[in-house]
Structures are given as structure tokens and as C-alpha cells.
Length: 269
Ligand SMILES: [Zn+2]
Picture 1 (cartoon, rainbow, N blue to C red):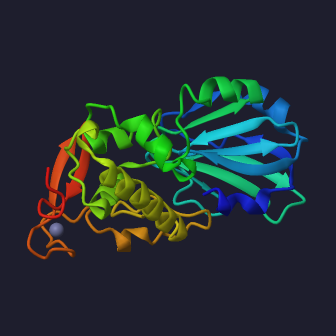
Picture 2 (tube, helix red, strand yellow; picture 1 turned 180 degrees about the horizontal axis):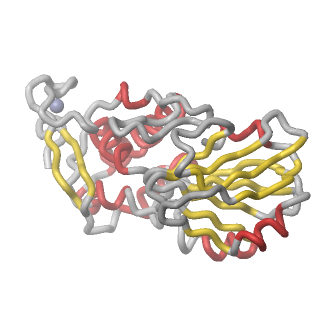
Picture 3 (cartoon, helix red, strand yellow; picture 1 turned 180 degrees about the vertical axis):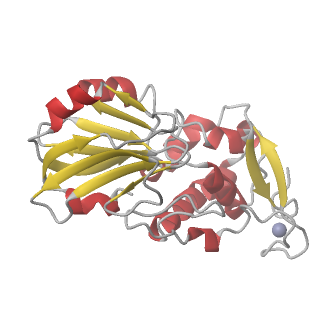
């Protein structure tokens, strides 16, 4: 998503529009008038990301923070449907003329924050280091003493930011670690494999522009499906034979209300 928004960088924001949407409104703060007053006439300086949040930074260092959550996405032109369009940012003088935020379920949030507010609300007390920037030592330090199941701990954005549910299953499979094991049961070689698997899975998923599941919700900024779903080894493959051992079938369990997929042969618990 972050890379896909590069075409609006350098553009002057000419309007912040609230499209007509009859569905449950998304959470947006401060209100529309304040956001318009602070952004219109300023320039998009860069697009950042922290964990699962996208950040449009203007030339005054204000940060428009978009958290897409389950069904939100950003786009440059087309969106899957007009009825769930939530925000339109018009820009002039850049390669693209607008940025759209679309969210079917409306669980996403939009915040306009000053640098200080950003650090208070999304600083280290609230959001851990980004998974792709976290060293093995830091990764282990943040999780190793936890009594929680490792799959559940990986989703804790306060510990490590940026790991989504399906990616947690994929990285545990790649590292051959049982999802129900408590973090404190893992040993040094386990942490090393898990850290490497985290980097591998996230970088590959970014390369393939994410996963578009059967509901078809996720699209890239050009309204095209991602391709990482074609590379899932366990996620949404319950009952299928494990590609690695070919001796067990992939199992689905529920941990902390979220689906986990794993191979009982390759990932002993
Ligand atoms: Zn297996």
C-alpha cells in the first residue's frame, strides 16, 4: 500500500472529501473541518508506514495516519465499490490526482496527528518496533519471557508491529514451530528460525503485494488482486496434504478468536 501511494507524493492537497456513504461511519479524528483546514494547500512530502498503519506526511510534518484493519484499503483511482468509499484526497501537481480510502466493514480509522501526538499515540509504548526493522536480539527480548502461545504473541502489535494473522501461521510453519507452544518454551535455534521466517514471509508477501483471499476484499492501489495467496503453505489449506512432509494434513485451530493453520507433523506442539 505504501509503495502504491508514491504517485501522490509532491502533490498539493486541494480537497479532503467525505464521499456519501450510508454504511457505519469510520472513526476519523479530529473532525472533517479541522482535517480540511490543516491539510488543504499543503504538499504531500512522503508516505511512511509503521506496522500496519499507513502515514501520509505533509510538508508541515503533519501525519494523516490510516489504519486499514480488516477490510480497508487505499487506491489511486478505482475502488471495489463506490458505496464503501470513505475518504478522497484530491492532489494537484503529482503523477496521480487523488488518494482514496475504501473500507467495506468500516473498522478502519483515520487520524491527523502532529509529530508529538504521533509519538504519544503510536510511540514505543503503544506500538512495538516494525517487524522488518527488528533485530533477532530485540525480537527475542520482546517475546521470550511470555507465557502466551507464540502464535498469539506474534500478533501483539505492542510487542512487534506489522504481523497479520495469516502471516503468523505462515512464518511458524516455515520455522517449524508449533503455534501452541508458549514463547518461553522456545530455544535459541527456534528464535533464530522464527526471526528469519518472519523476514522471509513479510518480504515475500510485500513483493507479491499481499494476499487477496476468497472474499476478494484486498486489492492493491490499482484495484488489482495481490498474489501472495498463491504462495500460502498453510493458511486456508485445512485438510490439504502438507507440502513439506506429505505425511500429515494441515489443521485449523482457533487461538484468541483467530484462525491458526499448521502441520502437526512439521510443527510439533
Ligand atoms: Zn508437514
